[in-house]
Length: 329
Ligand code: SF4
Image (cartoon, rainbow, N blue to C red):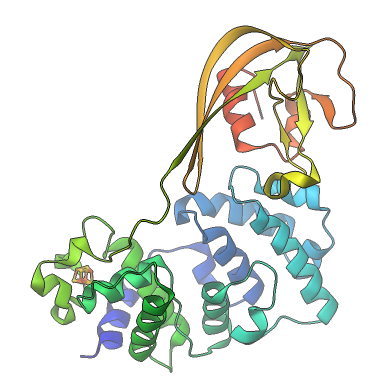
């Protein structure tokens, strides 16, 4: 049997029941694909369900205020995804219909080659293969190919190899099956080759090299950054600072202030540390209980626990407030 034949018959038996697999609505598939970028399926499910309950259509999302969308996204990380979703929804609503081809989808903010191919193939049947880290891993292993997947040339070569496997009659199903294989069987460290539907076609398995593939040459060393956050309370409320436009990725989010933000503050007690990682930047924040005199400026406000539930609150602030026993809802 061919690669796609083996893969599809396995997928029909073994696929996980995920909410976005029960729909062919391009809007719902788009939301799921954006949420699944950088985030595991199990973590996405509650966000996906809440998001679609609040915004069941493109028009509803297009009409939503940015701060409300960010608040619903809080905790999922990579907030530019939420901003771009809203901007793209406005674009789609303005155009009067959902784009139907990968090329048109690619023009939406926040939609790259992978997401465009996923939506076009699953919702509209366009025969274009998806390529993400899971797919690159499967291609490298099946072909026993040790080329560096950090190189654009290798990624394009691997894309062409996967495109040749694709079943043009069922591109959406094929793509989902290939992603599922990478996510559940052809695992990064310990590929489960005995359970794999394409094991007899896999040169990496035959050569015993599968677990060392794919090869990705390291380009950037991890950067470690130490900083401090202040928990300043008054009458059951906590002082938060709204991130400025210049803070790009986090613009509009509310966060705990740092000692540099409030030079007149005084630390009283060390509450502990929180860690946060964004790509290769590893932050360690020391969290202090602190006091401050008068605070000026529109970027500062006091919030109680209920107020915190209605604003986009940064993940580090959430972690630090938990450390301070400030009961968030
Ligand atoms: Fe991956 Fe093993 Fe399957 Fe090859 S046989 S595709 S290495 S799980």
